[in-house]
Amino acid sequence: MMISKHPGDGRLDQTVEQLVARAKLHDAEAFSELIHRYEGIAMSIAYARTRNAADAGDIVQDAFLKAWQRLDTLDDPSRFGHWLGRMVRNLAIDLRRRRRPLPLDTSIDPPGVGGVDTILETAEHKHQIDHAVASLDELSRSCVVLRYYENLSSKEIGELLDLSPAAVDMRLSRARGHLKDRLWSVMKNTEA
Image: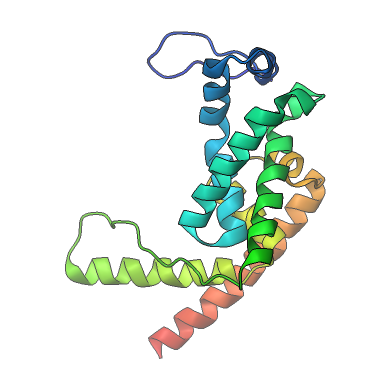
C-alpha cells in the first residue's frame, strides 16, 4: 500500500511494508512513522471499546510498546494495522476484565465561536450523540467511530476488526438506524 507525501516535508513516504521492515531492524524513525500513521485509528478503536479518553490513551501507548517489542512476530508486514488493532482490542478487553464497567466520558471539546446559548446547545447535542453512540454494541461502535471519525473505508475497517466489508456495511446501516431512532426520540422529548 503506497501512502502519499507528508504535507510540507517534501519526502516520499514509504509503504507500510517498507517501514515495518526497517522497524524490524530496530529503526526507531521507521517505527515512529508507523505510530504517526496508526495512532488515530488505534485511539478510535480503544475509545470505542472503553468510552474513556484517558484509558484509551493508555491502551494505545501499551499497544505500540508491545508492537515494538513483538515486531519480529509479525509475519505479513502489510497486516500491521490489523495486527495492531487486534492488540488494542485485546488490551481494552483486559482492562475491562480488571475493572467494573466504565462510565461514559462526557468531556466536551471546546465549541466553536458562539454565544452562551450556542455553547450550551452544542454541548447538549454532543452529550446526546455520545450517549447514543455508547448505546451501540462494541463492534458496531467501533465501526461507527472508524468510519465517521477516522474516515476509513469499509474494507479498511474490516481489516482492522476481522470483518468482511459487507459485514461492516451491515453494522453501519443498523447502527445508523439505531442512532437515528435514539436521537429522534431524544429530540422529540426535548421539543415537547
